[in-house]
Image: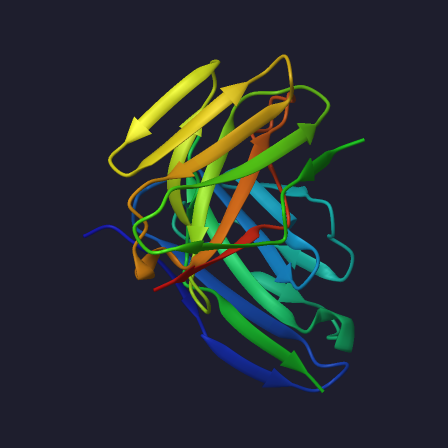
Length: 110
Length: 111
């Protein structure tokens, strides 16, 4: 069955380290999105992509970057992790209107 | 500005009906989504409304009034497994297809 996966599911890192979160989908969707979810804020868009080599900044993109070298993957990189980036990160993909979410990565920055 | 409002918490009884409201003010509108999210899990798609009116899917229905900037999710014959957060999201009027999420409504179903 087609699906969307994220890895790792849990990550603990230290302030200042570079961290990359993986997102992989087998639906062949062109559109992929990264969100973070924090108490009191709901889901907020970090970056998104509408196809290979296309990337765009979302609402809360500072300190994050993405790259899209193929259809299946959109890795999210935290260039220098900060404690404010402790959160749950969700990847999503869509072909048309509806976005389908991965299982999430819980990141703790100490 | 972009604003989506939903109640933070609701409580209902097993077997009952509950209505979760969502009001929105966004720059343009290209559809409204409802997602269900159980604690510690990913949001899962429930419904999509782009035209005014009621969409029914089994025990769940979603209503939209674009002129009022208002939607509701109606859950009938509540079950304990319906205890979850319900997220309202609006697709904005740009050609980007981005979703703007409300903070979610946590529903607790009691026996």
